[in-house]
Structure formats: C-alpha cells, structure tokens
Length: 377
Image 1 (cartoon, rainbow, N blue to C red):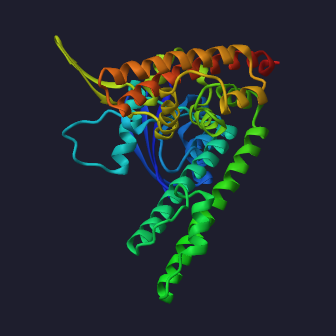
Image 2 (cartoon, rainbow, N blue to C red; image 1 turned 30 degrees about the vertical axis):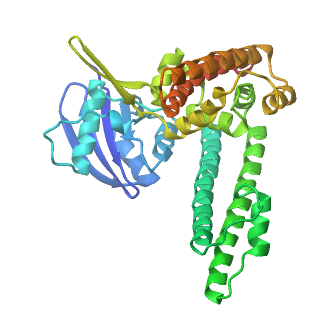
Image 3 (cartoon, rainbow, N blue to C red; image 1 turned 120 degrees about the vertical axis):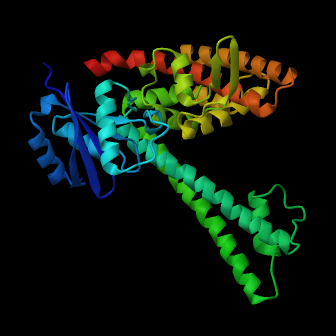
C-alpha cells in the first residue's frame, strides 16, 4: 500500500493552514502554523519521511518562497493554478481550513494543474521587466494629468510637434506660465513628475540591458534569436522568455497558444459549436507584448530599418532569419485577409499575435536544442 501523504497548504503572509490526505484514507486538518521557515521545518518533521510527502499550494502574492523552502528540505512541491481548482457550485462556506483540505483532496485525486516555477535567473529578469512595465503605466498617468491640466487652462501647443517629444516638453518649460502662484506650483509638480518617470524608465532600460548581457547563455541566446522577428526588440523578447521560461517545454505551438490565453473560448454541445472571445486564461504580460508586436505585421514584408540593424548587430543564425522572414510573409497576408473580410483590426491583431507566438516557439526550440549538449556537458 502506498505511503504517500498529500499535503495541502493554504498560504498567507503570516500563516499557513495545513491539511493532509492519506493515500487511501481520510483528509484531515492539521491546524495553522506561522509562515516561518522554523515552523515549516517542524511541520515537515512531524509529517514523516520527506520522500513520502507531496505538497501543494496556490500561486499567489507570496510568490515561490515556500516552494524553494520545501524543495531545499527535500520535499516534492507543486504550485497550483488557482483558476483551475475544481469548485462546487453550491459551496458557500470558505475558510482557510477548508481551502487546505480541498487542496489536499484534489491533489490526491490528480485534479490540480501546476504552474511553471521560474528559476532564479528567470524570476530576476521577469521582476525587472515588470518594474519597467509598471513605470510605463505610471508615465502614461502622469502625462495625462499634465496634458489635461494644460487643456483645462487653454494652453495649447504652437508648432511644438507631436505630444511628449523633446520639442513639446521644451515648449511647456519655456512658454507655459501662469500668473497665479498656485497654478504655477501645480504646473511645476506635474512637469517634475513627467521628467522623473522618464529618468526612471531610462534607468530601468539600462538595467535590463545589463541583466540580459549577464543572463545564462541559453536565455541570452533565445532573447537574441527572437529579435530576428519584426516587432520584437530586446524588451519584448526578454519579456517572452522571462514569462514562459523554456519554450521547448511545450510539445507543440498549439499548446503554447492555449497557455497564452489567445485562443477562442468554445462551448460545444451536441451538434452545436459556438466559439467566443479569447479565453485570457494565461499570462497577461505575455499577451500585452505579443499584441504590441502583432500590429507591425499590417505593413508589407521587408527587412530594413530596425529589423535589419538587429539582425546584423546580433549575428543571428540563418535559421532564425528564415523563420522570421516566413513569419513576415505569412502574418502580413493573414492580417490583410482578415481585415478584407471585415474583421475589426483589434480582432485581426489578436489572431496575428497568436500565430506570432507559434513562430517564436519555432525559433526558441531551434536555439534551445543547440544549447542542450553544452548544458549537459
């Protein structure tokens, strides 16, 4: 008889609710322990040999700290996707104890879906890229505040070029002034915030350049190879790699597309087949950069400008260039066909983003295959 014990952990910032499911027996709660390494070590010691334990907890704001603590203790652990945990429609009582018991029970039944846990290199790069993304959102908010402030007071640019260019910012500094001290102080505050966030983004982008240069060889090689694609510069390529890890862990591009949440939802019953909007079940950061890159494929295929400079400076392989050129031809034709059929451009861009991810998978698998022997040695 199997001696495996399945442990469900409902993790919070300060506490962990613990429940255990015997291989062929009951599911019982073991109470609540502090979320501290010493308490976790004592709990594992009481549960029995580490080889007989399998732990799981939901992915959440506490990150992967508990995962690394348990694996260092020799305990098998998986982090579970919260949105894919089975729920009962009539269950209206939710407590930490019940959540832990449900995790243990479903884990024993094999009904839980684990998420990919990044290693230290992927997680560090991912957090840096997400910090830049947050800074870009802050920049948009600060620009809106300053722009709407100027609009409310009738300050409109005269020959200042496009908004938020250096010429436009110089126009604000030189020509925009108010007689009232309160308005002048408000303008100064908004302008300083816009300047500060621009400096912050520049510093983050410089840090990203350094992080990519210092990344492990396989990660750096995939990031460089993905830049052969149109619309995929270093930040986009690094975001894809940091959010997905090894793309070759997906057996085929269809599974990767489903993981990204860019596939259509479906409700099929009997002879009726109904498809709806994309599922959005995957990584929102990944979808964002893919959609931004997809818009470049509305233009005719060519290898010039930024794409050509990237391919030359990075000394990319001929296979990566071949796949990138095939992507340009295929995706531009697809974009044109969808819009000609009357599809909205946003819908067409979403379809292109989904297929673009397939070409990324092809390039990444080729590059990762070249680095596997060196990694094994």
